[in-house]
Image 1 (cartoon, rainbow, N blue to C red):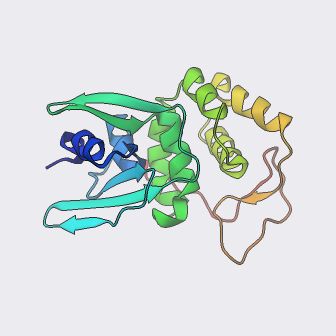
Image 2 (image 1 turned 90 degrees about the vertical axis):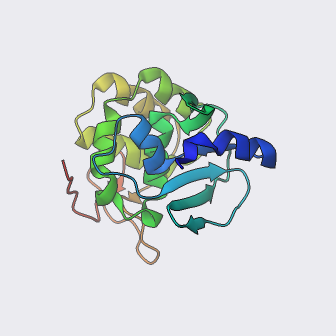
Length: 195
């Protein structure tokens, strides 16, 4: 049974906040060229993953619960919550090492970029705490040649803050070196999209 059919009732019963995230949310935004074999749920409390016959759900938690950027969608069983395109994109980038790496998600990010709106990005910037993820996000959006109107709010947001060099793909024993781009992103992995 698809997770969107029972997620609201389950988390209402558990009295927990949740939203479908990563590849699970991306498919509802029309981004996902391959069928998702696993569902991903962000919660405000840790849960054990569930893998039983056709049910495969991985749970994640976040240090700062989103105050915005959670969208309600309708299913046959009622309303369920998913991350907006902007939150889906930064969640993927932030958790890239747990989800197969930046190249595995590059095609998804490219498709998601078509669903981004200026309002969605501005809402994200009003509360999102991870500057290094925003640096990677705007760098990748530039690489994907997204419209300037979508890049501008992130650029202005970062220019107001002090930010330091970051690796495009974080590695535990590697530090960012010299960078030659405005967002101080050290390109330590060759970008290869499936599209």
